[in-house]
Amino acid sequence: MTLALATLRALADRVIDDDSLHGDPVNQRLPLRDGAPFDARDTWRSGCPAEAALGEMATAALRMLMAEGATVHVLPGTCGFDRGCAWVELSDRTDAGELLLALGLTQPEQNADWCGR
Image 1 (cartoon, rainbow, N blue to C red):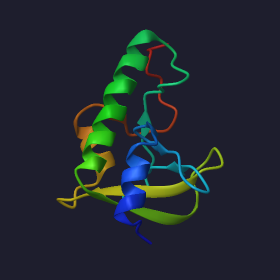
Image 2 (cartoon, rainbow, N blue to C red):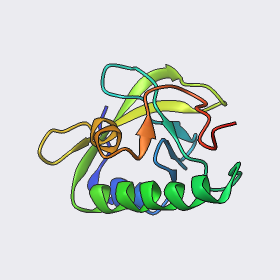
Image 3 (cartoon, rainbow, N blue to C red):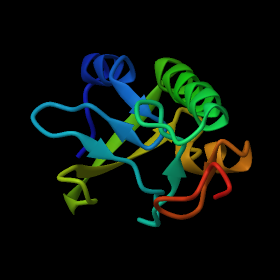
C-alpha cells in the first residue's frame, strides 16, 4: 500500500528522527526496503550532545527528501516499539534509508551506541 501525496506531506512534518514517523493511527518505524533495520540518532532522548546534533541533521534530511517527493510503502506487521513498518522510496526510486546510511547519518543496526560508551 502507498500513501496519498497529502498524507505523505503530512508525514514529512511528523518525522520523529530518520527512522521513525508519527502516523495515524500508528507510528511507523522505517526499515530498509529489504526489511533490514537501521538506527538513527535519537533526537528526543539523546545519550550525548553529538548524538542530538547529528540526529537533528538526519531528521532534517529525511524531512527535506520526503518533501521533494517520495512514496511511503506501508508493510504488514510491526517493527518494534509498537510501531508499524514502512519504508520510504524517493522520487528517483532510491531507498531513503540507504541514502541516509551512505551519508553516514544512520547505522545499519538497531539501537546503535552513538556516543561511544
